[in-house]
Length: 467
Image (cartoon, rainbow, N blue to C red; front, side, top):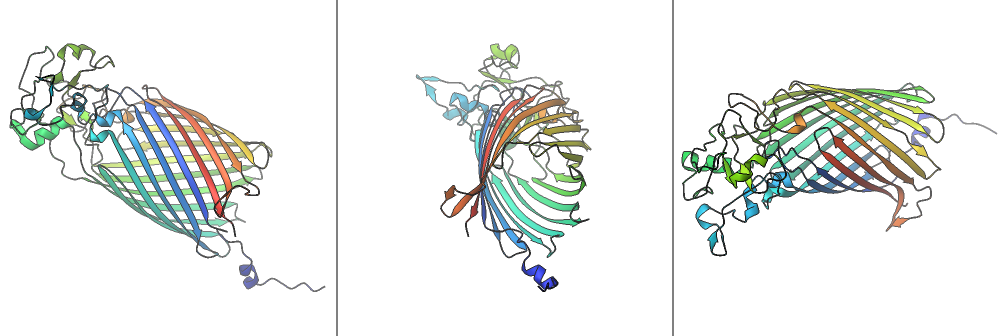
């Protein structure tokens, strides 16, 4: 028998494709949260939110060395907090002052509460995302290049993104270095709280201008006296509505032993533009308080017992126009035996707004057979507060920057759950011409030290085109 030496051409001829066939992922997630520190109402109020997010991802081989990925997703949410951009809709009196509805022949004055969802349009929305990515590999599968472009749109925000990636493997593919750059060009269509919107339109006359929402509306102080001194003069129109982000990510992974794999990574993210949220109110402790609704409920304002009075804003969130973020992380995976693998992850984060955070995560995949795997998951997180954070009614009007968004406060959180994975060995279950390759069900519970809690459940199904 004669053995012929393999040439480079013969190796190329029988090389493994980077993607064997068309793959389709069907994804769905549901998220639900509750909390007591709504940012839209200045750090106090109902944070109940639900979100449904179906997504489809299609990967198509272009040739042996390249494939294209396209994903389209929608994220439909309802938010009690966001609905209170105009909290006075709960009374049905959302039209101009002289046109409000009459209830049983009498005038129904507007009222609101940070604890009750309004019927305002900002209370629900659908975010739509579309992304395309191209990936190419070298003949020896030691180098990978990629480019991507995408965009998203929701009622007050739009985003365009693009980027590129590169990965190099060597040392018999035991070592990998990756580099990725991403640019996000975003733009707000600012929606601001009703009282500030009317002030923006009519300035000093907004309380009695017949075209203003507040024409004929009774505004009171904390003692219930009818007053006309409300003037949110700290509010000014935004100089820019753009928000641009530039991110560079680097990673290095190494197979250390037959059972141990490690990785380190670092990101640098720079943001510039309108980095605050125009819908989120702020209140000043050195300014008089003004209310619409039942003044007798004011002593219970920060309690869910408040159903009929709302504190008028002094301004909206103001934050610096630049932000530098630096996350540093590491991952260690250890193969215990053919049934169990330990996965660990740690990250340290810092930025120039004063936030520092730590993240620790453990996963323990347990394989029962070739098809089934159960993975318990636990994640711990803590952070310091941003320099500009203050609780409800605690800021000073002389400050340049302020926010009462508890996402920027000091807190710690715990997240625990599990995922159940199924891998179809023979792909016997089919959808048209596609056979099921894998499926996953994941459920997690999240709790935060500031009272926020959430539940997340997600599913994914991967199908492969039969050839």
